Image (cartoon, rainbow, N blue to C red; front, side, top):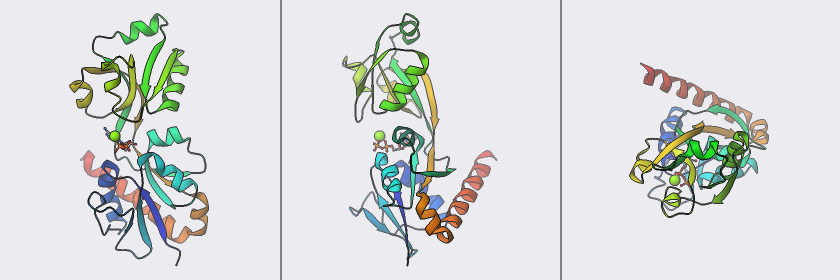
Length: 221
Ligand code: ADP
Ligand code: MG
């Protein structure tokens, strides 16, 4: 039996993927928030899930350690997307990649004056490309999380991070000053796996596609 392995991250993406998996007749047998197992069985003997760090999903799929994966456009953009087939925007885990700065900082004026900005982010590639496109000189400082703290303690003038409600920004007296891109999660597929396991993978992609469309219809009405 040639089984299918799907790479997912815990938290938001797992939660929002669960209904899509259910639509494809896949139910996880354990809750990854509770279980410490990294390989989770499903009700389908031919399908298993692996739980990896969000930023690692493209890597597992690219090397074929997982056949399918679900990952944010933010992560894909940093990874580059090489060696991945991206058939479907799942329209889950939606948010925006933003530049944010302290409420008192006049970002637009600094940019106009050609100031050199210190920007903290875990999205180095996205940030580099964005500021290069705008012709803004930046020193990028790589962080792994809690970017909101950086401007508050003088590590950076601004940050590049994901924003959905804006609550974290507000709680730390930051404001979003520029949108870089809108973000949602995508289905990614290993191209060789798609060829070899086409009879299993193709119907899954189609089912996910129909579930996404049905969900959008329900939300719109
Ligand atoms: P990690 O802490 O490992 O970076 P997160 O759970 O914070 O993982 O984020 C995983 C993915 O969820 C991100 O790559 C992004 O696509 C999505 N995401 C992150 N923050 C938000 C948010 N505020 N709203 C919606 N989706 C988000
Ligand atoms: Mg996070």
